[in-house]
Image (cartoon, rainbow over all chains, first blue to last red; front, side, top):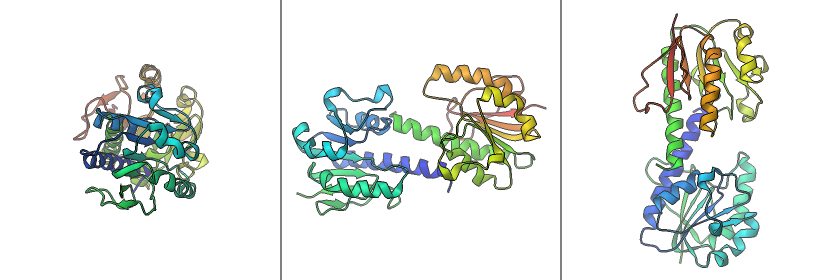
Length: 163
Length: 163
């Protein structure tokens, strides 16, 4: 499979998992939280799918398309290791949905970063809340969910927060 | 449509058009030419689909994934306005296939650049050669072809070089 095909499948998995997560939290109140704004494409997708929810975004440094930058009051700027420990207080409540797009081209560094951030992420969703992630997040509180049809295991990850 | 969905459709159109072009040049000898290496994803795709062909790449400055950088003798470095006029001499023959991925986020600048480069691109393919492009290339020598099924008009462009 070429890198072009592999990239298309990754984006398609991301889209399908986000749409599935949006269905899963339909009855669950609370804001959404995007970890990593990047170019703003998935933020734009969540904003379109969840027009009635507040969507907070943690990002080190904004470099997104100008149309995809969240209002300042929803933007939590800084290194995730520093912003996640106080994110719940900043948001004011536990969240219904987290999307964590943490990986970079460096596979080893991405794994290390995910392992370091997992305990910080795990405390943020409310019971029953959903975490969608491009990295495996191994922790007792996050129970892996079956992936939507067509998404190859390991391409994206889906979790539900225990009570 | 969210930016995520729009991006997926653009990449899918790119993939489908490249695969279609590869079929169209099956009986036509000659190398392929990639205008813009970028991250190397479409170069990798062409390399996989055309293992028996030489693939030349014009790029201002290489910033691709290390696995997707062409051998030095196939790399033509510099601004396209300077490298395209001598590309045919450098390659040594007319090409069977060109893929031009020229656009940036700035729509107006992308149109201007495409208009400027069109006459330089038009002379490179051999008669019957195929040009796949993310921008419209309006010139007498390049006859627009019907797009493959599922590709929305304007999302990608396909041309055959007249004799």
